[in-house]
Amino acid sequence: MTPHPLLLPSLLFPLLFSLFLCLPAASQKTAACPWAAWKSGFQGQPRAQAACLLRPVYRYARIGQTVALPAFLDRHVGEKVTVDRNQLRAYLAQRQINESELGGALDAPLSRASGRLVSPVARYFVLHDTSYPNFLLNPIPAAIDTRDWDFNDFALRNPARGAGPKGHVYVNRLGESVTVHGFDIANFASKLEKDKPSLTGLFLHVELVQPRKSDPAGGRGNDGLAPEPGFTPAQYERLALLYIAASVRKGHWLIPAFHAVLDTGYANGHDDPQNFSVAAWSESITQLIDIMQQPGSPSLAE
Image (cartoon, rainbow, N blue to C red):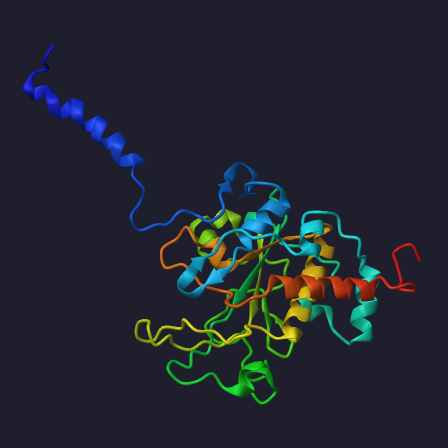
């Protein structure tokens, strides 16, 4: 039976509308790692999530393929932490490091999503770089890894001042850290959390001081080029200590993630951290734990 011409619009509209819903949004890329709303986290077991969320980050927010995790992370992400607070505190006391430099007191709970007691506790440890300052077409100074560079001096360049940073802890290139928001505070620093505010609190954010300069092949004022190597051994060591401290507070090893990978599903995504060595960071974690758990170290049993 041929439909009446006047009925054609009413018959075609639902079909066209359903086809429209099936088309991908032109302005938005597919997320690098699938989100599972029912579990307030990414899909897969913790180590599989970490492998996806630590995909290499390249210039202009390009994300590489999933690669194998280095030894420590592959064995421990999501597992129960065996370092106890006494061992960690003994290490901090020996090196005169205050808990306040590491996201807050070790006895304090971590943040919760949406700030409700029934909400899940923080699960992700997100790595950023500051991408600042941008030297544009000038060379990056040779002194960036020394005390002479102003941006390593938190007394002069304290990120707690000014417009208000979003990260929890900042680590300079000398391996020193300053807490801006304690790990007990639900504080967003990604497009994912901005888009889904109820997730704020699931992510702990650490900013690594790293300058940039412009890529001559890029647009005016871009910050496409980072130093190589991207970070110093001292930064990896302090980042390892922050990860241990946060995970001790959690009771399980947190799931690490790169900022850029977290935000790949959004327009104008980020490209940090650049030139980050997951292997070097993982090795730093292993070395610190070996020191903390040497025979004679204090334990909760004492």
